[in-house]
Amino acid sequence: MEALIDFRVLRAEGISGESFAGLRSSIGEQYTQASPMHSIEARFGIDRGRWISPEPVQSAVGWMYRANAAVAQFRVDGFTFSKVEPYTRWEEVFGEALRLWRCYVRAARPVQVSRVAVRYINRMRAPGPADLRVYLEAPPVLTHQIPQTIREFLSRVFVEDNTRNANAIIVQALEPQVDPTTISLLLDIDAFREVALPPEDVSLPDIFEQLRRLKNDVFFASITERTAEMYE
Image 1 (cartoon, helix red, strand yellow):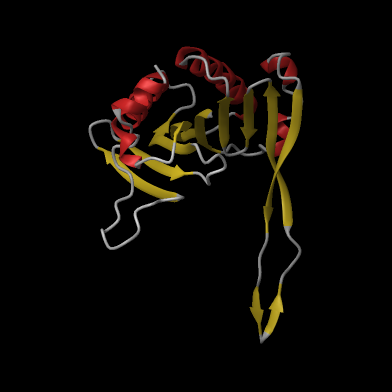
Image 2 (cartoon, rainbow, N blue to C red):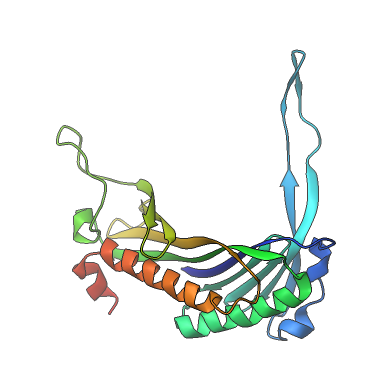
């Protein structure tokens, strides 16, 4: 469904959301749609027995640029490039992300890169109803006293990979059934590493390659041979 390349940074003094307005000429004319990004902060509570809810505070955090199936987010706290369907190849997606990241560095002058991530959100449709063990290596397990027909589920696991000095958040879900003859499985893998690197550090591409391999290892370990064969 979507592949994301994400950089988080320590913000430089004087950089605001409006620092990323008007980047279209420098990032490429193919990014025909541009829109501001805002964050909204809301608070509520009780003061001396009275319910209080101040007006939400809205602030500009960046600009979003779109080009067909690609989206680039230039924010005060980092840069994210995402490619939605149809997905092409890692080399193409990461190459474009790296090109735009350099544009971000010129505009934002970040102090430091603090986190990098590769996230892939996969939707797999399969004939159903079916035992989920046909498609997933680690579906939810129910005790025999519980009815075994699962209509929906959601699991989230945080794992550490000490060999790569990285982490991964793995989300598996069964979406609500619309077609009784089909099931829709989601496998969302977010592989990331906390870092403290200069924005133009030459090791960044290699770190992203390691994260991609971690993501791939998790993906293929999570699905069965049957599922893999459906998408060969």
